[in-house]
Image (tube, rainbow, N blue to C red; front, side):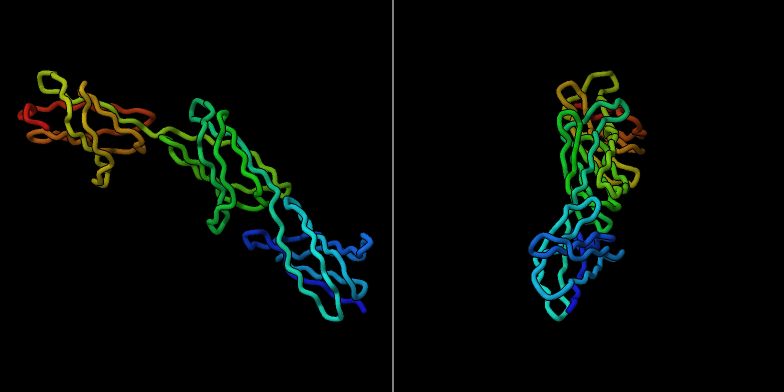
Length: 256
């Protein structure tokens, strides 16, 4: 009596693997049946009779799997999981120079936002994410003092995709605080407000009267220097670096 083995083939994250190839072999290793899974990951394969068999499932971009099944007079359920064999690789570079960027973190998330792979770029800027199955993903790259990058991409059925990433540096705002006579002022509090009026950073000038604010996105900012009265000014931050000097008048000798 012929009996069916059926079930569903999914990836580790539970998503279906469409069009998988199913092979049923007997205890002597002889093929006794073949079938192709459906688009939703379901499959059904018919054994020539009751007994013990090995069911093999494979699909492009995935590692194969095999399980023992015992076929009886009733249908047998066997759900299978296939692991991705894909490899997403590339180089993380600093824009616009194209210099390789080491230490960047690359994260791959699926359409549900689940993380499926992570990697860090090496000294040559190279990264490799293993175990990525064919499908659509979001690739995110982050690194210190660089603007994050997010890209939608599709890994083909081969499971192999190369994608280079260019990260642009965050801007640096520098400047000095001086008196009206030009004397440099140490330990002056500098506050940077964004366009919405939120405090983005607060720093103090060093012994040379200089201040540095790092990791600023491009945009319009208000710079406030603590004095009597406080001094404010507008600065537009674009590109890698912007400068803004402040001059304090009355009461600067009392600044702390």
